Length: 259
Image (cartoon, rainbow, N blue to C red; front, side):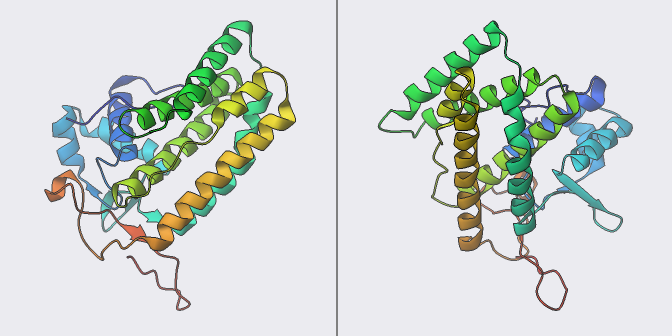
């Protein structure tokens, strides 16, 4: 059974399709289901003990989120990693993330954000961020972002942001799984601290720095990856060591090469 302990949209859908979507989202973001892996509606209905309609609805929502794709010939598959996706994600986050600075925080939210910020800073100062420290820091970062997104009072925008963050996490998880270079945590705690203290300009600057670090990491890892052509991946391929699929930019001929 897929791991269901993962981040979901601020207003997760109800019903069986919502359960399937959250579980699939978790597996895709965590790279249990790797980029390019095909998704069988029949297998998923068996795995989740759901009707095909619920599974199909979940896949349609994940397609709208940019996590899966579909074609008439190939059916459903986990979205591949591409330079286009990286550029689009960074551009979208550069424009949308600063909206968090307009969140209206009550006293309880400020206390919670301060607690998360202090926890993140304490972890950041540890000499070794390996082991369980790095996942804990990332959970702390996401909790800060989710808190601010919920405080916006704009569920649609919060949903867009959640999708962008999930897709970013998926890329980081993918490149870390297929390489040795980890994405080191940024000082998101400084962003949260500035926001609580009303230093909006400083908060925006810290957020821009964090996104620049993410962009540099993703593009560097994309350029140096050596993912092999045509290899299947993920649990259904029977090996956790097989990489997922990366799509290279289109060559001058206009035909898409998949590496």
